Length: 179
Image (tube, rainbow, N blue to C red; front, side, top):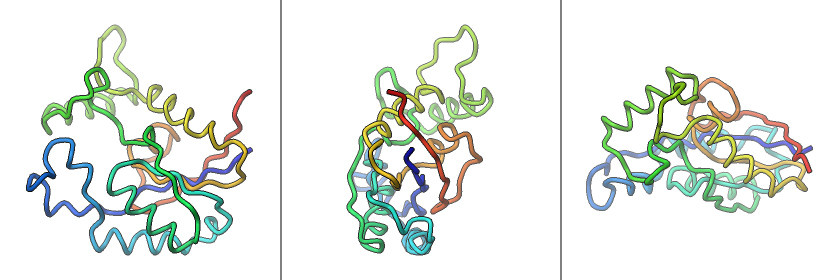
């Protein structure tokens, strides 16, 4: 049995949103605000993280920045895991949708408790689809005792079945891969 401590990244610095190359999907490259940096330094003080053997992180800038802070503060190696990314509004074409369209799909996700409505074809990622990709990542680390997973609020909410977490919030998840 492996203990995974899922942590939501710190607050993102959105001051450059829509400028330079932080447009469209590149929005996800943005890193943490000063408040976000402080949030993660504070999270690093949590004694539950003291025995972590590894940090695995989403590839998005806010998560990588958060994981790098934890890595330094805790003296623990970190690795990027592509499939720990945030919820996708379009898993068919992987297009970056307008805020309006993505927001509409997100509302549908929330209104249907993470499930696609019965009989409807949906392009947005369901809770089951998120959970499948995340569990495939966790399966790779079944031989560890304690792992930190730096990721995103919506992912944590629908994969772990918890309330949407605050920035820097830790949620414990015990998992044993079924061989």
